[in-house]
Image (cartoon, rainbow, N blue to C red):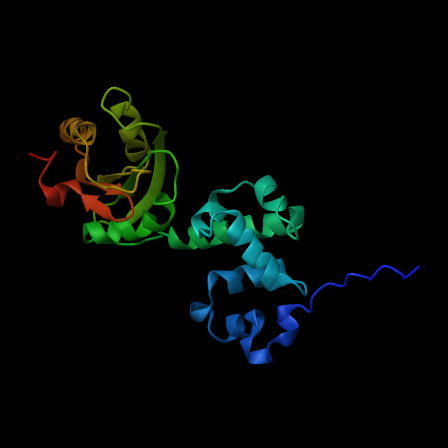
Length: 230
């Protein structure tokens, strides 16, 4: 009887690459030119890091945003990942978003200045989140406060909760900001109604509502659009 052939693993693609073309080398040389596969490969490590990175991305329909939204357990279920690597991937995403949201003493001179603080993270959220950016008299950011998670409508949002952080932190003005998970930043009638009510309350409290931004695949300023502030 002939012995059964032994199935051997294919040669890792990493071993076939010249050093300057490996993910680690490219990351150390210029992180901005690295693809998502290369960045994931460095996090995953090991001989088959490229193959595993491709499998990971393919497991979530080839969309990096789906990898971000996946739980640790869902990531760990992908062959070659495991729990510890899944934690590293989640940590890398969280660090990146934390850096994008760094707002210490940032100055808001335009709606675009405010949008850039939150666009990267809030455009990825699967539920609506209402937040406020608290500003001092020089329009410097004091903090970004999470107010509400869920549908943003005048029937559900309590304006006392909107202004409470601003009162506690002695903010001079605030910017309302919430996301549309659909990706379409067009303001709804409910968005406009919430804005109008907030502007009225702000005048009573002497806390100006500078703007209300809606975050989607892009962003929109209600102040610039001319709705909710008349």
